[in-house]
Length: 368
Ligand SMILES: Nc1nc2c(ncn2[C@@H]2O[C@H](COP(=O)(O)OP(=O)(O)OP(=O)(O)O)[C@@H](O)[C@H]2O)c(=O)[nH]1
Ligand SMILES: [Mg+2]
Image 1 (spheres, rainbow, N blue to C red):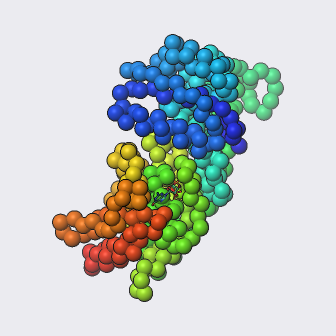
Image 2: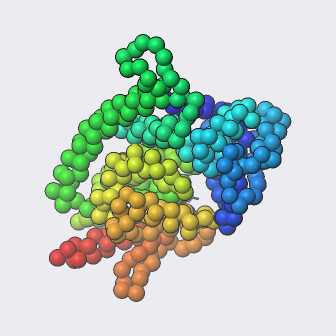
Image 3: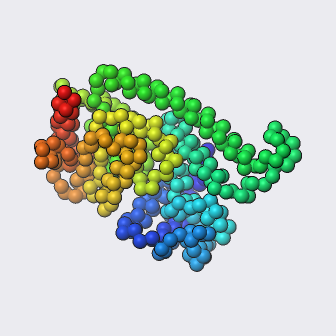
């Protein structure tokens, strides 16, 4: 409902280098993110700065360059790979004479497009409202005008207060609806725990191959695609490892660098599956140039949601792109810590199942 761009629009992208060593790959990821939103990137305006300009984020000279690019390419939209303050967004829209989106709004838009279940939709709308709310508080002064005349509200109440109250009311209703859905979820989860089932959550950076791995293991047919945030909703299945062992395995939403906090908060319900798992399968795209950054970003989000103490088994996925052999990796104490697989080509999956059984047996031993 808050989608701020339409699919099929043409955009000028803006990426500024503040000295991050991963800058080049970050630009590539941003272009992919924009394409995943259904927007066509026409041109990337780049620049170097030591810190953001308070008024235009990019500085006046750069803003002119962006304006020129907008005109010469006939773009309808400018998207920054950064978080903009409401004032910067407004100033930029004025000089560029077109809509300006920041990275957070873009990610929220993608989530809005992808949400399928009622739970997912509620969570995304909640995140969007939270994002708008911070913008109201941080001073949309043009909304601060007095609201004259008669109405239900007492005299002197400003439009800003009305907006805040409307949003506040909607947020409250959404949270109540979500609480109902969450309760059903936690009832299901408790039933599983009572049955003593071992639960495994597949986590990882977006596009690492989580859904592909989930499908390969469970023979399910979840949507997997070369786009960021293909999956938004958690799906769980029973997975038989051998005649004696089975686990409940869940596919989850992917993570990304600078995931908006509002989103992390809104998706807490979905991620509860993860927080209460016995084991995390942390899927990593071995062929990705930024895989180390991606691993630490995922661990950062896991920290934020309180899942940092859950044991992890690393899954190095897409070994077919690296010509690496399938197999397992152990630490000095003989505990399995990683598996090399190709989810797409079905390589290393038997070994991964064996690693899961070993980990289960290990954790049973530790419990005793
Ligand atoms: N070459 C190769 N490609 C793979 C492999 N596993 C997955 N892919 C591809 O990687 C892309 C992303 O796969 P998904 O399974 O959708 O990734 P995901 O981690 O679920 O992504 P999100 O749901 O967007 O977070 C798809 O194009 C897959 O076909 C693999 O082992 N080898
Ligand atoms: Mg997925």
